[in-house]
Length: 273
Image 1 (cartoon, rainbow, N blue to C red):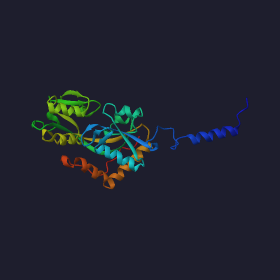
Image 2 (image 1 turned 60 degrees about the vertical axis):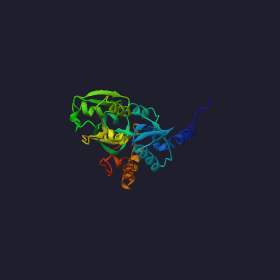
Image 3 (image 1 turned 45 degrees about the vertical axis):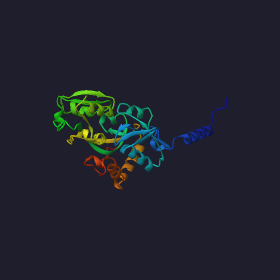
Image 4 (image 1 turned 180 degrees about the horizontal axis):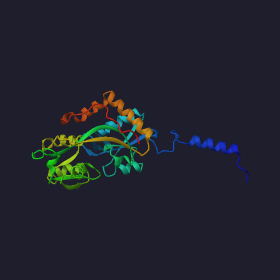
């Protein structure tokens, strides 16, 4: 057998370098390498992410994702449905490249995936039936039935962090929570005010937001753990969107009629990790 020469090894090494990804790192696949960006969004949150047809979605989160992709130079964006209960798994399994779905940046979530943003800082509030005037703030939920959407941590901020004795009623999604609220199966839904604003607008006069916020909810764009280049590029895109008025335009487009006091300044980013 002919021995392998140094020249042959050098040729092989050069070929391996040419075959390596353009980013030149051993990290996870980056969104910057994608020609088609697959984005997970919610299918049942009015004003944020709603499925309106076969592979067609609309809402603030959808517009944010589309604009970020455009600023990254990615023209082909495909949206798929994710839920609070499976969005982390979809990112980790590579079923989506990004998730823009009212995904709160928390220490637990950050240990599993990388977040860009926040793209907006919302506030947790409470939605009740308009006829129920006894609930004026989160403390008034004591002894009441609170909807517990699968995969969401919002209920923990009521029952565990503030130790309010609510009765949790499980639901598969916030869409199901709203059905339960209208039908009287629960007394309240508590989560990000942007989510509640969308549902309240759709329900008309049947529901009302208590307008007593009690947390800051930093909504981030989730991507594969370790995609720091992609994260930093998204943060630059988000900064530009706030500075040139695009973010304000999109927020007013979807939530101006809700009566919420919207914020149009650049959010303080968490830093990519």
